[in-house]
Image (cartoon, rainbow, N blue to C red; front, side, top):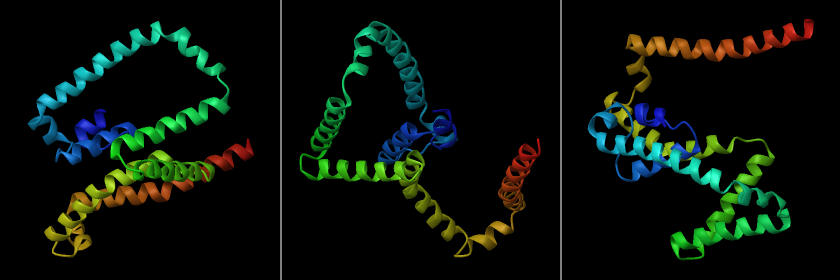
Length: 185
């Protein structure tokens, strides 16, 4: 949550969804968000604090009852969860398109997990894609169609590019070196 409020970068799937909700209302995270929207920032912080306290109390009170869920056979549990997801998809749109979208994304998520693709990173990418496209258009306008030449004229940009290249080159080398040391040991 801190990265979302301070930098406008989601730290996980839940904050990526929150960032998408903010973008629907033309609210962009970052330092200007904290400076200009202090009421929203403090509401989020106090809401998180209240949520933690409420969940702690409810969790302790319902611990024994919810512990019985593990005894429910998967043959009953999985269809129940799928039915609730489809019902929620229908509730949002009021048409068959909602449950079909839920089913399509469920199949996509299952395929991604089966083939070891990171599902959370994909969700974040889908949500940040629109924002990235807008920033690319803005960069192209500022640089008059030559963003690389424009950025390479700036010393800070050159330093950041150098650090990125160093990380990209050194990370695999360090990994191979560690692997070699483990084999030798």
